Structures are given as structure tokens and as C-alpha cells.
Length: 156
Image: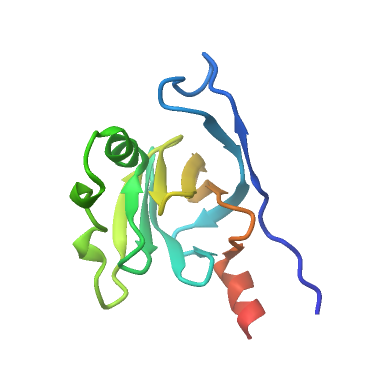
């Protein structure tokens, strides 16, 4: 059986004046860029699905379906949580509106905005044109990332 990797390892580059904040840490670059339309999904591993719900002028809506124990945050919220000086027991858990029924968490994102899935997976809106959105997925090398139709074909 032919098995091709469908993602690239993330690269880390030092934050420079052109990208990232040196106080926050390194800027993540690289990853896999996929084009998706409304009602198309991608799979991250076997348990996380990211669906493009709507593409409209300047913004998209993404639905993330993940296990309750996997936190999903807008990047700016993730950064605020990470930089807040709190005890580990005070950190908020995953959002409660992802429970049951496969509803998932729906977030609106604009170009160059991201969402974080867990601590190591970042989904960034690269560009929007017409009804198509380009998403960059940065994940550890051992986490497979596939378009939904490819994932389904592999599982069949």
C-alpha cells in the first residue's frame, strides 16, 4: 500500500522585527497549506476535524470537533492563557459548548489569524478568495493531516 505523508514538519525561526514578538517567543512557520471550500473538512490525527462552515468577505467560520479533553482556543486567547501567571490548577479547561452531538466549536477567523488545538497544533487562515480559503496547519511531524476525502479513502 502506498502511503504518502500529507504534511510537513513545522520549522521554528527566531522572532525578528518582521514577525513575532521576541518577548512571546519564536515565530512558527512552515506547515501544510490546504485549500478548502465551505462544507469541506480536514482531519488532524484521527480525532480532530476542522470544517469550513462559511466563507464570506474578509472572514471565515471554522467548526472544530475534538475530544473534550483537547483545548481549542483562538490564538490570542491561547497566548493570554500561556502568559498569565496562574497555578496550573487555575487554568481553564476546554470550552463546554463542544459537548455531544458532534456540534463542535465554531470560531470566526480573518486572514492571518489562527486557532490552537491543544498546545502544538496551529491552524492559520492564509488567504481567502471567492469561496476558497487557504489554511496552514502546523503540527508535530507524527500527527497526520489529511483532507477529509483523503482520510476517508485511507480508512476505506
